[in-house]
Image 1 (cartoon, rainbow, N blue to C red):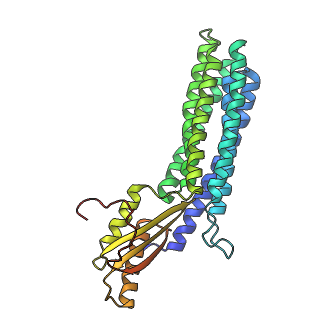
Image 2: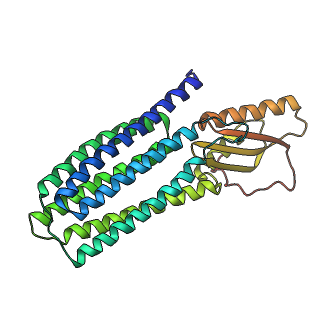
Length: 310
């Protein structure tokens, strides 16, 4: 059996290492793209530079969120510190929208007054370098996500996966502008990237608000929880299932309906068994089970039904 504290510490180290790698890659790309933009004047390359600045900001936020989310619950924060993550994500979403608006203004200005792009070869070389470095980072993040299941690293990885598409589009823009004498390609691609950034910000902000408002876990997960609880032979029913997430932490509460003649010791053992089964399926979750005599007439019945046959 794996030692849980040791496994948790190893996962924490991997998550921190992933955040270090992401920040380092973003800083290297910022320096390379800044130099390339100054040499070429490409607004599409400027969009990529802005995106790398956003990546650095997002990765720093992810690093801070990981450190805070991994901080154990204390006397003042009995439910942990997981909500630091959605709070930071809202700020990240606002920053992304502001940067996309700035990029849109610059792109529209270039649409009205197209400007030639100089030294396209330098810009293309920097984009190829960016793609190779980003591929290496995404591969490492995938390994960390597979080992830890970290939502923070997974969200951060989405930025860099999107960067691969952005960098490819910028190569296309530079080729069309420099080799095919189509200067409008530069601001048009920049506007497309700005829309992509806003779309990403919308998703990040929506998930953050859901978490801050204690939205229930997905119906599929709630159904699986109900099935696990009802599978115990001593459980006659389940009601009042309540779930929520706070960063990497999940909180699950429910009432088990047991035979009214069951002894307190046996009822406690049944509840412990159900808690252990759910915790095994949702590692690190905070599970609270209350026992009720079966047949309470006013028990809430608003939970998603279990699949047929359970």
